[in-house]
Length: 344
Image (cartoon, rainbow, N blue to C red):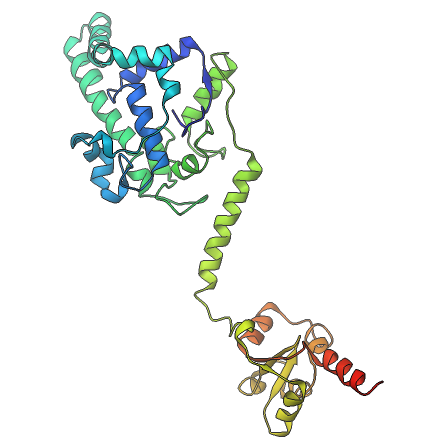
């Protein structure tokens, strides 16, 4: 099942029986047992309650969890009432060993023997070796899908998306999507991404064997992608010097700013922020004289298109030169206060 609790789609009884049989043919446990662990994995991902947590090692998440018998009481508990109430699921669970032996060994042996008189080949290659390779492919979802690839929707956990895992596990490699949108019947949403299981489920729906295919709204999926991209951009932004934050700058009076010019300090105010251009004035692309004309004044209009429509790099450079802020905002606000005090 490709969900945490809610169904990703509803299967008809004939389809349930078919899936229960071929699922047993994988030799990976009953539907009830597997679904219980899968739900625990989703609810407790990367914790000690995760039955195949990748944090315990890549080998452990791949097959170690199966080889080393776990204490059932340590695995996270989940709701499986729906599984207990499903007749097909419980029939397969209660008769799993017999069904598994028939599907893993007897059926492949009989088909190869009766069809091609190759009883041994059916038993060894179609039966045992096929099950071994199916195991490795399936378990890659527990190991590689939590270790290799990108995290386009969420990166607080280990699930990842990668084409290699998708190719090995019939599309299940887009695991970051699966964990973020667990009740969606798809693993891959882009047309070029490899997910044959998605198309198989869709085909069953067209044939009337499946219904109520769950899909998360594309807008919600895109929002998660945008937020994740923004997170990466913010992380990259933090690696650079963007100047002293405005909230940390000292506040000075407008008169102090004016006096600085007479003291030979090269300060310029743009949008209420004082910038020290002493080290920059000779580098100014417009020339020293043009920048000097704004010293001791409010150069906001000059900077924002009054003289030149400054480029983005100019804005970045300006932020690096922050020195202080004008108490009250800017020269205009100070002038209003002065005029008010003088009764003008």
